[in-house]
Amino acid sequence: MTTDPNHQLADFPQGVGEKLIDALLDDVDWESALHGFSLERNRLHVAVMIEPYLQACLKGKKTIESRFSRRKIPPYGQVMSGDVILLKRSGGPIVGVCAVSDAWFYELDPISWNTIRTEYLTEIYANNDFLVGHENAVYATLMRIQNARSIKPFDFAKRDMRGWVILKPRRGEQCCGGGVR
Image (tube, rainbow, N blue to C red; front, side):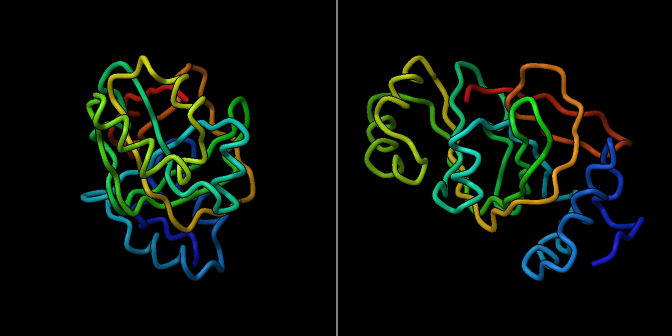
């Protein structure tokens, strides 16, 4: 795969698209995924992550990324199959990438909490203490992730407290984000 200046990822701020394409050179799985990336149907996200969740994603132990919040903030309702997530180490660079294969959105109530606890807890790479720490959340986003892999780290300047950012091409603006992790 070569960095094509006409590729839809080539127009993102901070050169993120070009850096991602370069980081995934010679990766056959990602070459086809990025070739099919379309701004009309896909979004590029940055997820800020802490350990042990970051490494669990990269090693395939965590197959569902979850975000809990008190308000409807990204990624709630704004992520879908085919989207690409850049994995950013909290306080550090982007170190990985994964694709979203499915997403679920919950307005949390006792039934949805039970569903998350019984059906997804292991894939979230969490335990009941994790859920207790998020018991004040009103909304949850669960995303099944695939093709997670480490990439050559690259910087992404972000100086706010948002845990989730939806990137827009330069001709647009950087979108809102946030969440609890």
